[in-house]
Image (tube, one colour):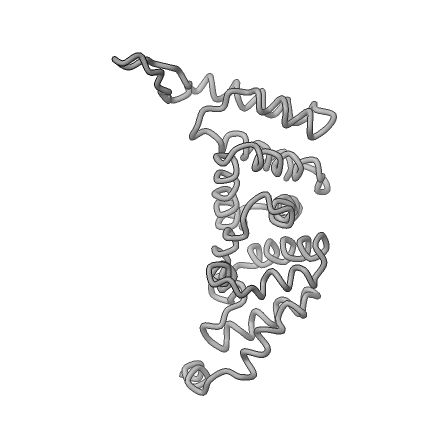
Length: 234
């Protein structure tokens, strides 16, 4: 619970107290019923924002939203719009959704295919609408050793959805940035650390119909220094 205390100078101080198990159950139930009963995403966001969710408990709402989204037979844009609106409401929600992306990506193998698809489309919505920064993509290392069949499906759906929403030319321009900081974000998805990983990424994007995204990698492979080629043969 978030309560207010007063210090010796009479200044109000926010004091964070842990929610009791009963409080948590009640809050989760309220969140769930609000999500499932609202007619529009605006109504849902308005009602959810009124629920007093203490700082540090953001994942309670986010996890419930993701759970509800994953249970649908097909992805409903309703969930993406709610999530995006929360990211715009307050920095704490944007940071929490960024953390959630990392959590979901690292545990995506636990989800069955339909749930995985819906969760991937939810985060694709947050990315192509710029509700969360693309820096979250830094966690993705697209190579044979650091991906699973589940994480590859997740990456495939996220990038395909982004391409569909933005257009492949615009997406390609974003990935082929000259901003050094942004290059770091995408370095794992478009690896140039060794030829084997570069080829793997080229084959991956080409196989899912997004070959144009690999033009830069193909150029790199063509002009790869002999040192890298020698290293790959070791």
